[in-house]
Amino acid sequence: MTEYQIQPNTRRCVVSGRDLKPGERYYSVLLDEAGKFVRKDYAAEAWQGPPADAFSFWAGRVPAVGGRRRPPIDDDMLLECFTRLEGRTEPASVNFRYVLALLLMRRKRFKFEETRTEDGREILCLRYGRTGTRHEVANPSLTDEEMAAVQEDVFQALGWE
Figure 1 (cartoon, helix red, strand yellow):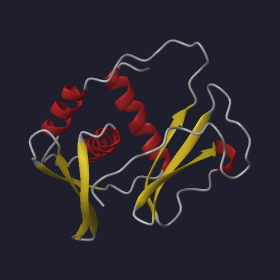
Figure 2 (figure 1 turned 135 degrees about the vertical axis):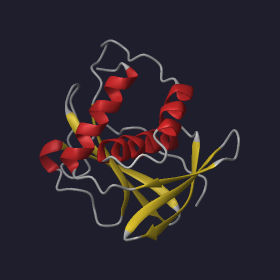
Figure 3 (figure 1 turned 90 degrees about the vertical axis):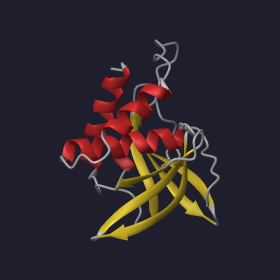
Figure 4 (figure 1 turned 180 degrees about the vertical axis):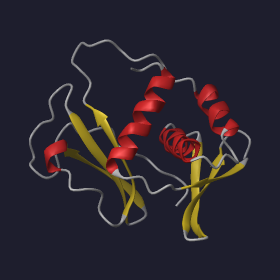
């Protein structure tokens, strides 16, 4: 699977069926169903953690209606930061690089090629569309709380907080 299309936030909890309110925290999961990514959104109170077969998951907040818009994402800055973190082994750097990789995939700058296991760790193999450069990213197997904390760090770096 190298092509992917991820649908936007449904603003509806897949468990309860209720609408998610502006400013409310939610969790999203990507599942591989018949070779296609399927997104499912969960209200915070319905979140029991990602399903065992989840490809990826993240936390977010439903945007406020008429609220201030976030500044645009600078993909070149994200890629530069991602590249600078290559080879770093500190947990904070590994975690930050992983979330950047997911964001760059979501923004269609990286294409997913495969995963493999190396020394008991999952490695994502990604390709940068412009140059064809292949990148490998260790999955740090973050808990929900750790993922939310790293996402907040990335959002701060983007000037979103």
